[in-house]
Amino acid sequence: MNSKTKKAYLLNAVAVFLVYIVFLTLIRFKVLSNYFGGVIILTCIMMIMALSLNIVAGFLGEMALGHAAFMAIGAYLSGFTSIAIMNAFPTAPALLVLIFSSLVGGVAAGIAGIAIGTPSLRLRGDYLGIVTIGFGEIVRIFFINFDPLGGAQGLKGIPRLTNLSYAYWITVLVVFLIFTLGVSKYGRAIMSIREDEIASEASGIPTTRVKVMAFTISSFFAGIGGSLYAHYQGYIDPDKFQFMFSIEMFVIVVLGGLGSLTGSILSAIVLTVLPELLRGFAQYRLLIYSLALVIMMIFRPQGMLGRTEFSLYHLIYVLTNKREPYKKGSIDGGKSS
Amino acid sequence: MKLFFQQVINGLNSGSIYALIAIGYTLVYGILKLINFAHGEIMMFGAYFSFIAAATMDMPFWFVIIFSMGLSAILGMLVEFVAYRPLRQAPRLSALITAIGVSMFLQNVSLMVFGADPKVMPRIFPNVVFNIFGIEISSITLITIGLSVFFMILLELFISHTKQGRAMRAVSENQDAAILMGINVNRTVSITFLIGSALGALGGILYSTAYTNIAPTMGTMPGLKAFVAAVLGGIGSVPGAMLGGFLIGMIENMSKAYISTTWADAIVFLILIIVLLFKPTGILGKDIKEKV
Image (cartoon, rainbow over all chains, first blue to last red; front, side):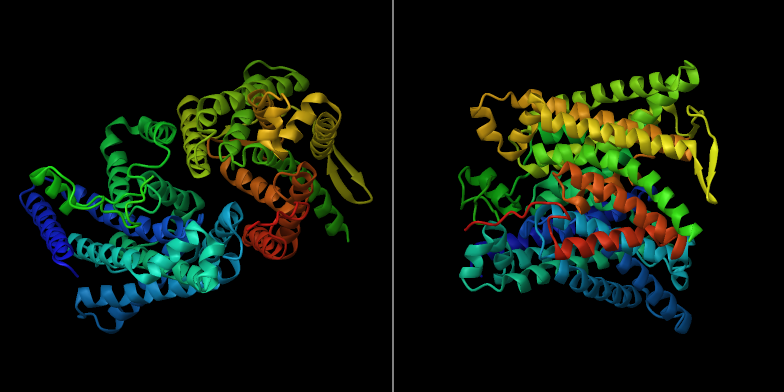
């Protein structure tokens, strides 16, 4: 790690702390309502979902339209686990329970990812999209009909362990992990398949295994997101995880820019906060949202950030020195669209 | 045995509706390689148009059908012109997201214009129940199957025997070569949307007469299933869409009757997945070899 990267990491860590403290004080002094605190938690969850989907949709370049299914698996399994733990040890520390049950949910979603990814990743493009839609619907119908986990009524009585701090720091951790995945050799292997599957196979990358691995990692983090969601809502409604919800996540990723993690973060914020801000317009809300989507795609089809990454270090360097320190802080070496 | 034949009739009934809607998906996909997510909403608008014609204007049924199909065809062409045409050269994913946006937009427009409460579709066809060897067949079922088959034959004749139909096949085969042969691609795409939307609207009319309910969200689920039908039959192929539609209708009704009502949708998707895993291009789809 050279000094530049070190500085950049330090800078980002400071920024993350500052944002956290700002939000905490704003809510403490009632500048922002508790309701807005809830919006921040939901934004964090959507960020995790979008970033995890970006591993498959952006890094691997495949259409996965069943991401809500993995979120559902994570939500149900983690909710079930934490209910069981809380019944057995009512005094267990909240954070530990949350982390443990999130891991259970994540691992369950990851296993489901292996089970679904192994057969379906033989397909490509639209067909993979259809198969993932199909799996998503099957998972949803399974939970509707599976009475031990609440059936159509949904799973109730999940301890509400997710609060602003936990959601924020878990999201920061997930963001960090996925960023490091992006610059690791595994991340590069995934991206090489996106660029040219045959060439990367010729270079000795076990493409099938790497694809399934990407799919599994993606579903693992989706399970974590689902766990946070379950512990924030306190109950799970299987109807939440409809096909349109998967589509919503996919829209976030494409709108942010496929393969751009900061783009996903940005667009998760915009697309979660914007509908909340439009609540005043009530019935025009979704109309404006969908219109914005169409207009955005017509005028900027590559998404907000395209494939480039936003870098704080780079921004500050440009602002102070007025020249570029290195080529834009992009994960794929500045090969922006 | 009686139950079985009853289910075959029911399967043909819903299958012909799915087939009509699936044709719209397959035509558009064949030409633009775009999953037109807004197609389910066109179908929903078709149902609403027919509701307007039937409930407020009190028109005979042939007029209701022509009115609704005509307006929906214009709507479909408008959607293509405004939302998809600017993205013809853009990455396919952007067009897909636009289609999702248009779908949400149309759903919310109908929510605002027609309201959220479901409307009850007036009876536009006479409902007489025939009893043939103990199997009950309502006239609505017969009309549904008859109208669908009639329009499918019409479409098949159009595609295989007219100049415009040949242009459609040419554009879906190779767009650049079609341009060089002097085919007006934009017009062909418009006509594709016109035909697809009109047939989708017919599907919407028949769907709403079968289930008597019209709501802004009614297009999503049949739209998704019709799309599944198109993929099952081999997306891009018109006979494939028809076959897929009838298959999906059959599978759905059979699993409702013999296995479980609540699992029926899951079974439909499971069969789709199994078929795609063994024949990735669908039943009647053409294999495309990947070149190095």
